[in-house]
Length: 408
Image 1: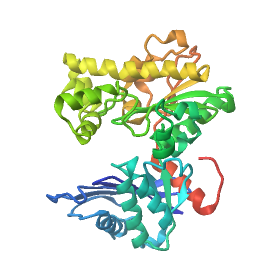
Image 2: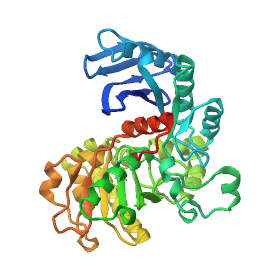
Image 3: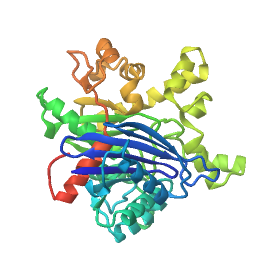
């Protein structure tokens, strides 16, 4: 089966065409500046067998973008299929499933409406996700569409982990609770880690793992026996770790204080904590960890401070989650930063011997993963596992369409 995986952003569309049997990526690409007032739209496309191509084209909406993507996929020179009939199903990444969607779900009109209703909880992503789904339903009316929710993997959290200490009616009336995100990534690396730990004589059913998805958006999860016990992001992706432009955990009264001082609107404050904070806000240099690391190496004090905060927050969460789980068998690093910055991994694990965490400097510097980068005598295994969210979405799409119960 050929599965098309779509990730619709507010002004972008990422896609991969995957052969579900071999899990080979047949084609992939990115459509940018969808609906941009000044135009300038572009599609970057790559077919593994036939090479790369770029198309400069204005796209008024996601329906137009998907129409152009389909044309690229069928193109005689750089396409991967002769007809869209070769595609058996489409898997859509959807950010927020709330409490209603805790499993991959076959899409119909009612499901799309529910995704749109959840835009209150995911205002930046869910509307775009719904637009992508609707566009595909129109262009491929007879092809099954499956929604895979970023929040779903975290649905196993106990109530004491997901409930905020606010008046309980805000949970019952408005759905205010911890949901967590990056679920497809945390799920994928957890499944890989359990296989690796089993070969190390760790019982998967009793395993205690901390997964660290570190990128421009970052989150951590405490996973016991393959099920999430707690995670760092909350109602929205703004809570938890310091990120590229998100502040993560702060005193909530700061917002009321700044609102009064700056005469700021709720929209202003939302922009502050989501787009102007994090690595960018502290360093003043960039939201990209590579730029911040380079700046710190050149002596920039604010960049050094940003790195210190970033690593310190992660270390605090490791301590908290180890206590919550009653021990720790493995730490997993993934995501753009987690996979590529050996210096950040080393700094996070530095002087953690008292927890049984010992990183092997040589392995950390040389191995790319999936790999065990801990010292031979380390009680806690430190695992470097590249994530593959598209593969998870493709697998779960196949499971829904075929009725298979095979583990992802």
